[in-house]
Each structure stands twice: as structure tokens, then as C-alpha cells.
Image (cartoon, rainbow, N blue to C red; front, side, top):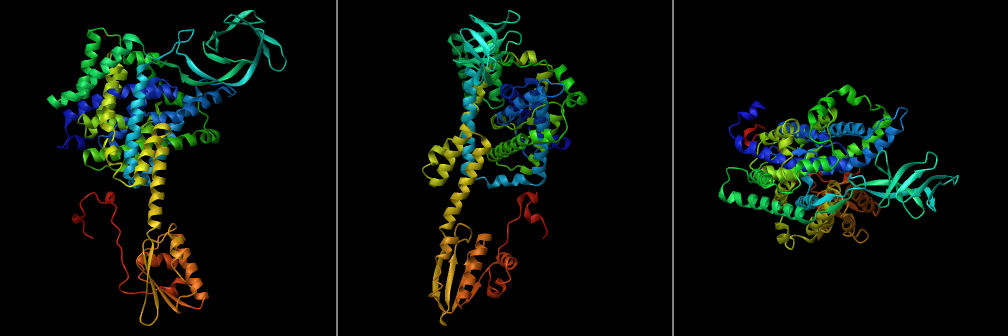
Length: 630
């Protein structure tokens, strides 16, 4: 770290101010992560601090911002819910067991990412085509935009004044007939319904309350059943019910968002000495407080989400007691089987989003990061976060773009973001709670405008149809499904398109030598996709006694090509004809000799055989190549 600080190229002011700006923009997304994963916001905020700090200090891409991202949260939702249920089935039931499974999954997720970095799997991000990258950026920009629209909604309240939960009916639990609630098997009357009250027939006391098709336990005030035509049904919780803001509250929200966007857009035209996003957040916060505007602020957002709030000193100190934190988790094979699929998927999604974001930063800053180093740093951050009670995370494209636009180029910007976030959690929560959500939404809207590849509309008619389809498909899949799925789909479609185009390129020019030998001059790669077209070029029955196949403009690429040549040679020999293979490169000959001894008899060694030299791995040579002595 001291080596970095001594670097003369570092811009302390820009990196520091950019880090502070990003820390403010980080809060709503991290808290939203907590709500999606159904965990305490303090867990997500602490995890964002740990992952952000470690990846900023040791990662392979200065300027990249990491934290608790929604793409990872979605993966863990089902695991946490199932973990809670598993905990209640123990001999000594444990509440909130899903949280302890989450910590184990985050640690395993980090281990997988570290292994990926050590095995240098990060370099495979170079295989992602540019249309996939553009589709990823566009799709993620749309996802972030849609997420901000959710800020214009409020949580609907239930009969107890709590956030109403959206529940869907599952299996039938009790029959209801003539206001009597009966057991399905014995047909015994267990409860009676009097208006909205459900009375226990044994104790003659009120047990449940019915409201808007839901049955609430009067003690826990939670939804326990749905009411249907036949009776009471078991429920599946699908999240909080949202309604659009109304009246002055909505108009105030829109006005503050527009004011924020105007400042972010206009301030750089006047001066670039201060970050526009941070200035906009401070001005809008000042306006909201001075004029007493009825606007939702960060504190309202956290409290209304049912989280633990930002009184984090006690909670963090408790989580640092590792013995108590991990004593509830059963360390056995069943636990590993339970968390492994979620950990692997989260690790994959996290690395894909991180490496894609790294590529975007490379383009924005005209520099190059180290993907393998970033994988190890992300994994280390997740391991430490999970061990100390925090949640997992990955690179965040929205916050990264805000950082780059605010002038953050070095590691100090990421470190400042993490440290500032921790200060907010521990000491400045009362001040941060007063920041209007509208200011952060406005900053995110401007980030979406900056991130979206608007040039894709201009070039979509100028690029190959296959690439245009990939761009659109990746954008759509990112929006409607998942980032990892979108990237895999895009790469697969691009690979198939490439294979199909190259399969059609195989050509065979035919000529005869003066001695009557027929020569097939092959042009184009010989691989699984071009085998059928390759075989159609030969006329074994009518060819002369001597045949040569010239590969000077072709290459043997895979096992399918080897098998096709082996079969072709056998057919010519069975027909009593001589066949020779000429002008094969050294790597092709090694491959063929290893596959079958028969190729030794038909391959012609010649001084004019082509020789190919592979370019070195750029990551293996940190200095310019002319400085090395080979």
C-alpha cells in the first residue's frame, strides 16, 4: 500500500472525492441487497466494506468498485429460506439458521474464486466477444434503471401497520364451511370465524386475524395462511407488496431526482475540480433539510424495509466473536452438499460480473487490468467477509462507472469508498440517514445514461446479423433472467456462428501434375464443423492411382479432423491407391503422429512445410518484449 501511495501518478483529491461519492451511492443498493436476501442491512453493509476494501487494495483493476451486488443476493434467497426451515428441524431448533448457512456459502464462494484465480481462469474473459460485452453493458444499464424505478414505490402496510407481504397459496391446510374451520382428516372443528377474527374453539380466544385474503397470527403478527374458496392454504412468501407513491410525495421525489440530474449534467460544464455527483448529493440534501421537504431519505428507506438499521457498533462487535458466530453451523457433509451448488453459482456470477466490469474499466481508462489477480482478490474478500459475519459481493458496474466519471482511477478510490462506508456504519449514521433517496436515484439515472452503449443503435445495421442478434439477445437475457446466463448464451451463440461461418469456408482446388498425380489444395480450417464439406470434395472411385492433399492453406484443428483424415486415408488405401499429405505444420504433424502410426506413412516431410509461432501471453510479460533477452 505504501508503494502505491508513493506513486507520483496518484491523484489523491480525485480518488478521495470519488470514493466518498461512491460510498453514498453504495448504500441504497447494498441495503436493497439485504432486503432481497432477507438479512439485516448491517450484514450487507459490513460485507460491502470488507469485500470493497480487500479487492481495492489487492485486486488487478484499480478503480473497480466491489460490494454486495444484487446479482449475488438473488442466488442466496432460496438457500436462506431453506436454511431457516432446516434449522427448525434440528433436535435443538435454531432460528435464522439460513444466515449461518449464508456465511458458510460465502466462504466457499470465496475459496472457489481464489482457486479460479490461481488456475488463471480469469484470462478466459478475453474469449467474450465485443457484441456480448455491449449486450452486457446495455442489459445491466436497463436492470439498474428498472431497479431505480422501484424507489418511486412505497411499502403497503397490513392490518398491523407492518409491511404487507405478498403470499401465494400452496397446499390446503384446513377446510372452511359455514364459518367453521375444520381439520382435513378428522373433520373436527378447530376454529370459528367471527367477522375478521378466527376464534380457537378449545380456549375460546382469538387466534388469528383475517385481512385482504391473508390470515395473521395475532402473536407473531405474521401471515400464516391464505384464505381461499375451500379453506386455509399454506403460503409462500414472495416479498413486500409495493404501491406507487401518490400526491406531493411523488412530485417531491421527481423534482429532487431532476434537480440531481441537472446538477450532475451541468456542473462539469462550469468546473471539473469537484465531482458533480457528490456535489449534487450534498446540494439536494441541503435543499431537502432546509425546506423540510416530505421526501424519503436513507433512514426511512432502511427502517421501512424492516432491517436492523445503522446502529452497527454492537452488531459488528458481536460478529467478531468467531466462536459464537460459527458454533451454530453443523460442520458435516450434509452442510457442504446444501451450500455447494449456491456457492458455485454465486462464485461464477460474481466473477463474470467482476471481469466484465473490469473489461469496461479497461476501455474507459485505456489501460489493462489483471483478471487472475482480480479473481484472487475477490475470493479473498468474500472469505474474510464470510468469516466475520458479512455477506458476499463482487464488482459493481454502476458504482464503478460513477467512480470513473468522478475521477477515481487508482486503488485509493476503492479504499476510500470502503473506509467511508465503515465510518457511515459506525459513526455517521444519523447524518447519512438524512440524505434523500431521490439524490441517489438521480445519480444512478445519470450513471445509466453514461453506461448504456448508445452507439449500438447506430452500428446495429452495420455489423453482421449474427453479432447484432447476439447484442440484442444478451441485453434481453440480462434483463429478464440473469447476467451469467446472458454471458454464456452470448458466448455460445457467437461460437456457433463463428463455427458455422468457418465451416462454410473449406475449399478444395483440384489440379493434376504432369505425371498424372491428382492434387487437392485445401483452403480453410479443418474441424468438426467443416468435416462434411471436406469429405464431399473427394472422388475416391474415379481418382487416379496417386493422390496428394496439400494443406498449405489449412490446419488440422481437432479430433474430428483427425478422424476424418484417418477414414479418408483408409478408403484410398482400400481402393488400392496411394495418398500423401503435404505441407502440414509442425503442430499438426505432432498431433497426427500421436493419433495414429498410419500417418507416418502418408505424411510428406518437406523443408517448405509451414511453421507457426504463437504469440506470448501478455500477462506473463509485464515489461515490453524488447526488454527481454530470448
